[in-house]
Length: 418
Image (cartoon, helix red, strand yellow):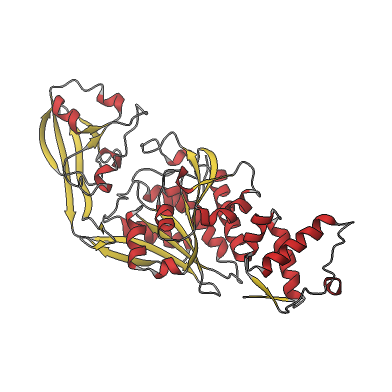
């Protein structure tokens, strides 16, 4: 299916998108050029021990392949980056078929695809512990020679874990964080599709001249990147009212807003505006940087589809990206941001109930019962210090109604924002 940012994707998705590599800075610069916003880079040197997370060395593939007895290349890193598991150890030599099988990982379901073996990269104790390659099961089953030649030539060296940041300042000191990952080499629905969606989210928000929030778009390697950043910069925790993560928006099934308890109110309001958009627990999906933000105390959500048959395989390919799905994610995330922009807490300027008929804010309790009850509940919610989002969800009143009524109170100067 057709999708936007084809050139950006084709130029970058096959690069070495792992925790630390020589390719990452060029990827982030490409995103910056597409976005039209200056890139701010946070750098964390290899060996940095921050919040119990240790930044690994830069891991780069010079050459990698497997040959049969006739010297024919059966598979290679040039064919697809998933051929070598990220943070595999180097190896050159000949091995028996029996020994080879100990070092090959196969996708659990897809016979004709290479597998994303992520465990060496993300398990501290497994990095560089063994050499590991992946092959499609259909290829593995055809191997009959008694011996095979293996080449895994790596360039492993100290480097910097990079976190890309793009900022759109707002009128207040409060922030909304937009989160995406650059990792998962050779895959697009996993992680990369979230970047594509958030590029357009940022472009749209850049046109909001009266935005209240500062929007901070962050791109990092999953989990370790967000963990290190928040431990290093606690102000990113204290200043942030909501974190929105997104991936798996190119194709799949079952749209979800996965939400922490503290973000469930805004999620429920937004879900009512879309067909077949379900609010679910934050931990119902694969789990990613939204979990990190939630653990740190920031209300967090993830906008994504849950089921993707091509998960962690070379079949996770750009040809499957569907712009219609990406647009749903964009619209959903923008609606979350718009709702947050409208949220506020008011206080009345007088100690007694205001004279509603004087300001044409009275609805008859007999002839317009619903609005009468709505208004009374909104007034009481404001008096109790509740936000507009809290009033809407706790009282079952449409958020747009609550917001419009609040604006009338402000325009009539009987209430003010605090």
